[in-house]
Amino acid sequence: MTDMRFETKAPAGMPENKAAMLGADPVLDEFARAFEAFKETNDTRLAEIEHRLTADVVTEEKLARIDAALDHAKTRLDRISLDRARPPLGGGEPVRDASATEHKAAFDLYVRAGESAGLKRLEEKALSAGAGPDGGYLVPSTVEREVLRRLAEISPIRALATVRVVSGGQYKRAVSVNGPAAGWVAETEPRPQTDTPNLSELSFPAMELYAMPAATQTLLDDAVLDIDAWLAEEVETAFAEQEGVAFVTGNGVGRPKGFLGYDTVANANWVPNKLGVIATGANGAFPASNPADTLYDLIYALRAGYRQGASFVMNRRVQSAIRKFKDAEGNYLWQPPLAADRNATLMGFPVAEAEAMPDLAAGSLSIAFGDFRRGYLVVDRIGLRTLRDPYSAKPYVLFYTTKRVGGGVQDFDAIKLLKFA
Image (cartoon, rainbow, N blue to C red; front, side, top):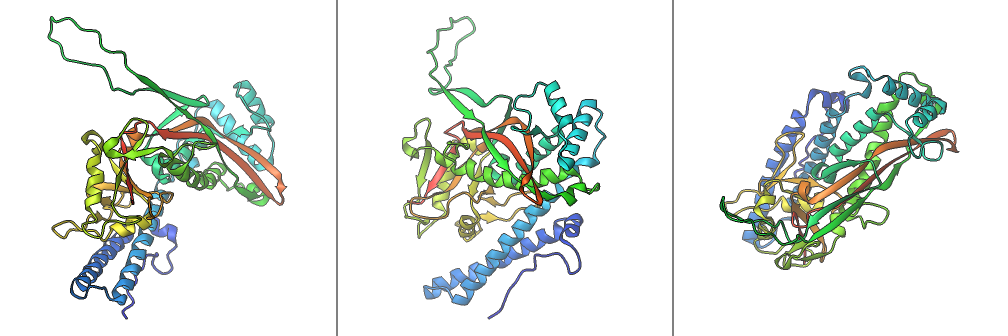
């Protein structure tokens, strides 16, 4: 049995970060070669099924190995893209705002030595609510901006959705249930009074999200350590993982409400405040014949105005199943990304990987398609806070870091779901 493997690591003797500095082209080329091998092996598998009604076990195993290599290469591409998007916080222009410089120096002293007098004085001067030992202290604005920017890079739904920054505890917006009241009139004709619009209020409360990175006092005493960059890197992954789950499956209780947490209805009977679903006609699977037809049904369930900015959302295991699909001309519907910072495409639409999306199962809503910028709203309350705790986990110093974030569907006609039932 031929053992086909795809080397997706840096060359011998070269560290991963050095490979990232050299660029993603070698990894991207390896990814493209792996996909060509995947297509060739899958074509062989399909030919075996056509002639012998079953595929050879060796071919199936080879296809599974190549598929795993594709996933691994895509993970490396994502990591390289994220590393490129991480400029050092201390390497930019010097801060000219005297108050920002003072706050940064006071925060650095608080993190390293636990001295909070400077931060307390600054926040009392700024009349910050919730300041002090109980609520923690505001991190410098540069750190907050960097954390939010990096979250947009690695949180799949946040990267697609509309993001609003608010100063209060929740964001409210009014939407028209029956659409805008309008009409055509000639220049000199009277303007008849239109019907009163039927308005509904949507509320998006900001819930508290926390992370608790730890450090040794020796590390904090190291003058070379960039405290701002360290804290941003420590909390970004924890925040992104929690957000990724909440924006997809959250129930709205103590966390944002994910788009899969809303009521659904068959798309043919769609009504406001519910998400329309298209059924595959097979429990927990695509139809045995012409499986891609259900994807076309999903695409065209969305109105044309929404399709221009639409994306698919699914996890990597569902994406793996779809990689084998072809159109009537024998072309693969799934195509690899053209650059390290780009997504793979399915039928010409970007594919966002969200691991919180469910696997294929009876009745599962495993694929979403829509214009998430119009359909889903993320609300960030301004202010990222950190509370230093040197007592709970000696000899480590914990940094209880919190932010407030909310989310929910704001346009129920902009997102459609594929139900495997």
